[in-house]
Image (cartoon, rainbow, N blue to C red; front, top):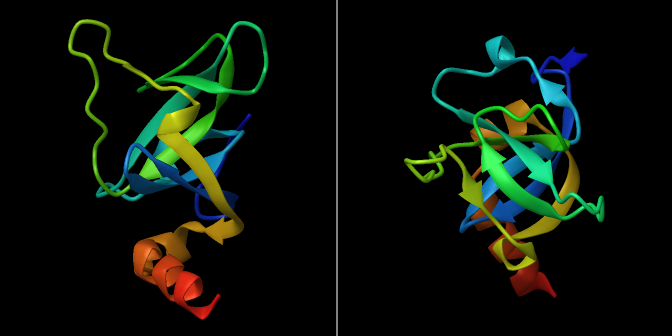
Length: 116
């Protein structure tokens, strides 16, 4: 089953230097605005829950879907990007697509850090 991106609650992540939305669900690409980028993520074969690869589409070992404002550079030979646990971190949950589109996540996180 695929979810409607406009109705889904996401987790905010920092992945490969940019803020992305993450859900464990498969997202219906037709519900994502055209100016955003959508990728599937694959988890490892040991099922530890670690993201190990980003691709335009994942069938086996699908861990979730990410939506981002900038494209992620993929290896031209494999049309994928290997990642390890140092390449991403979870920041917050319950973020909606419209919040992500209309908010500079980096600016908000910086303000929170200053308040601490």
